[in-house]
Length: 193
Image (cartoon, rainbow, N blue to C red; front, side, top):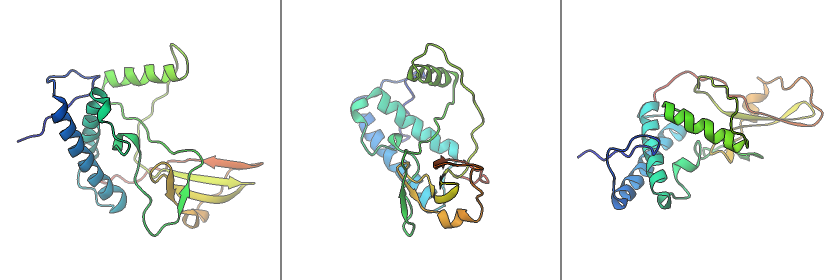
């Protein structure tokens, strides 16, 4: 038996799932997503494509939008990346490193646009869109022009200290009077999720 798919509230719903079935499916989706996150972020051995992973996340978002009381604090819709790997020193980010929001349909784009404008306190706003490239999110921290810390995004709050790996490859900002945080996103070769 195939599990039911719950579509986003911004998409047309073909069925009205009951709350108990939605709770079971949300629990199953959280387990599946956690497993795929572990395979991707910890084992470096993804077993599904990015599109398949994104579909699992979209389905969970749709359930949580329809039944907000089913949202859990540890829901994968509330965090980015994965825990820092064992064996690395952990670095706490001064400002959380968040993930980009995926937009798949024209309705998703309209929702994204109106939400960003509302956050800016405007009726209209100008947005610039670029293709999303897979890569390694990293934070470089400089003091007086010298690299003092480099860390991965990790779970968004805490990352892996990779300062030693980066020091030989980074030139830093041309000028810095104090503390600077730079968050480049160097593209990485495509690999299956």
